[in-house]
Image (cartoon, rainbow, N blue to C red; front, side, top):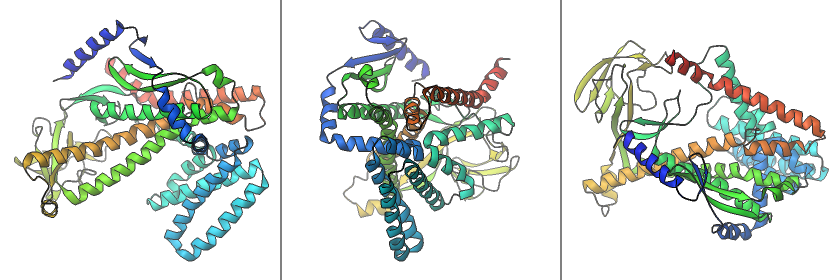
Length: 497
């Protein structure tokens, strides 16, 4: 079935929905109900104090040292102290891995003693500095452990330590905007999610990037992302005794894209700043937790694949018109070797420069192609293919577990199921992480815009100055967005002209 069939079903289903008594904004439908409220109420009542504490953790994760200063100002220093203990534990883990038990014990005594002294000082400035320093130490150690040079990410770590995740996003957009202005890059820093098709599959893509996501992964990942986000808002609202007017499902046409929770906005406005900050912070924080769980599941699945499967080659999904592979390689061709070496999904042509010939060993014989420059990096060789790994079951795995059905259909089902879950976890992490970051950007209507206003209340800033800061940050953010999306505008204008 091609894209036109799915489009026809979408249009027909959407037309039917317009005839029903459903709240609608163009083709966005809101199916409201109060029947799901009891679930949120039950979860919130398990431990209201725990949910409030998790929201406080979300404040520090979102705004770094400034988040710590906010908690200090609004009487939540105990929550901040616990957060700093966990950060200290992270630092001590790296000290142990690097230096052993002796330095672990000595550093532990010094860190705990310092934290207790800071807590007794009851100083907002000290709380800000201690939270910033601990986040910075954890960030440095994490990147160092991953093999990333500190000098390459020091500004990102410093910005995140002081200002939190929004600063990392804005700094990244700023660096990319600078590269676009200096004409050293044509890669957009911002790209919309648009419908697309590839290899007979319908899905979405990000213009300017070689990213295609089949629609079934998009649907599942987006539902999990939005449900977890809104559920967290609902749980925190009820933990703080805020009334929830309704819950429901939101869809674009007939495609459900998530859930929503509708608190009483007038009641929210009347609450103290800390209550509002907690309510706004938990959505993105919940998405980050989903990232953690999906990431751990991904690691477990990779371990399962390592012991049960083996890569037999790369399967050609589709070729790109205008490039060497088009018309030579066909969909379904299995590629085993490139220039006599096993294929590498991460770097296809090691040691090959654009213009060189490559010998491709496939299930259909030896094929020789000339390479050209990659559209993303003119120093890399390219032939214009989309591919996926071709995987088989390891024979020793079948021998270890002889009771597992070893017929062809069972093996294919097992491989497809594990690979489907592995790919799904990847896209769940992708959507949750990116939506969490975007949602923290300090501009309305994102939660980050509301949080930024509350954050300013932690400092001795007049209301007029606070408004000017909010407007200034908003204008700067919009400017960054426009510059980062400009390469797409130039490309579209060029194609039209």
